[in-house]
Image (cartoon, rainbow, N blue to C red):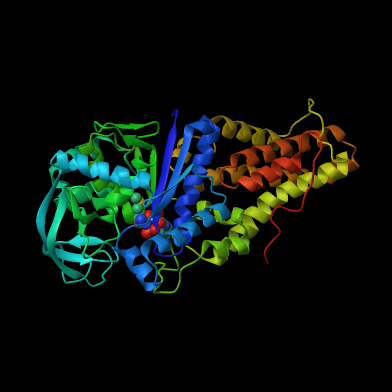
Amino acid sequence: MVKKFYITTPLYYVNASPHIGHSYTTIAADCLARYMRQAIGKDNVWLLTGTDEHGQKIERAAQAEGLNPKEFVDATAVQFKELWKALNIFYNDFIRTTEERHVKTVQRVLEILFEKGQIYPAKYEGWYCTPCETFWMQTQLKDLTCPDCSRSLEKISETNYFFRLSEHQDWLMKYISAHPDFIKPSSRYEEMARFLELNKLEDLCISRPKERMGWGIPLPFSPDHVTYVWFDALINYISAVGSFDDKGKYESQWWPADLHLIGKDILRQHAVYWPIMLYALGLELPKTIFAHGWWMIGQDKMSKSRGNVVNPIDMVNKFGVETYRYFLLRDVPFGLDGSFSEESIIKRFNGDLANDLGNLVYRTLTMIEKYFDGNIPERGVFVKGKQAELIEEKINLINKNGIGLSPSVITDCNFSAALKEVWEIINMANKYIEDTKPWNLIKENKTDELKGFILVLVDAIREVAIQIHSFMPQTSESIIEQLGKDKIKKGKPLFPRIV
Ligand code: MSP
């Protein structure tokens, strides 16, 4: 097991309000961080999130609202913080790329790389996609639309600064092939390996002339230029947790990151630009980059222009934060795309949460209330049937080996499989109640059997509460509280059915 765990989310653009896609990465990161805090101690885990606040997209969004960029980003960054609070995200640090600690580090990185000859000026001609903030060479284009988003491109000719990506392509390819865990899941690993085999990297344009786009971090060696937003933003992962000394040596308690969680849309920046930047700086690489899939609305991408953007706060108000977190992590394996709909949330709610989990807890507490005056029976030697033994075996196995019967289910971000495993205990316990028919035990005065039966259920519920803690912290705590130590404190049903 690792001794420390440094996990990051992408820095979200503040040009628009947060949507369910943003909340997905952050909830997943929060779940892993909570899990690791339990596993290795809370002081050994660091969860970093934040906002990406420079660049043309944001400058234009500010203009559209008639605000200066700083006023605009101050207002939208707050929305992300509020959302994380509503979603019960427990982060250790929130970095904004407009903060001084970040700006200073970016400028230091630029200086170091410039002195090393890794950054150089050149005349640039090419095509630019403003929404993607990406330059394209003529040779990469079929027509004058962006190969990524199909929107029209702008012709650009100017002097800029370039980072020597191309020089390090061979090194990166070797690195990736020697480190199968560097990019996950394996489909994304293959995608990047193939991309590097089939394409020759070009040097990366890392500046923008101020006269065209002024909202960025000034280059220390050329006051007429600001830094390209991606080059700026990626550096947050080191600027938030350390700094460079006078000699250019980077010191940090947390670096290298153990896990960069990202969406599949920003894999290339993280798996190509970022490792090469770190390598050129002489820094260690993150251990793993995990790129998850996308939430779609039906078959469509979510977008402002389609008018189908889902606001996570609306979902929380409708279904509750615990259900929302559960749904996102349970419904679709983390690496794959999923289709988001309120109907699917309701289905999970009524099935997994109300019928399975909620019912198990409610029924068990009601029996303890009715048969034992609310006191949990004392432990003793009771005759057990096969079903009870199987449940106990399963509890012990999960308790010993982690939720998915192996810790890798969590470190491989296989949230859905982990939850499925926990639900097996729940389903076994519910079936056990139905098969045992406790009211008959009462009729037949089989008190010892009844005690044994209740204790198996109490153990099952307690284990479930522990295991779901990182996914649904409030539900877990509420179950533990209702179960009490010796005497139960029955509350309202956890998940009253949505009809
Ligand atoms: N600012 C850059 C990231 C810089 S990281 C140094 C950026 N920001 S973003 O706000 O556009 O999106 C960030 C992330 O949001 C995506 O990588 C992904 O994690 C998440 N998602 C955005 N839309 C999504 C879906 N529809 N579905 C799932 N997640 C998606 O890119």
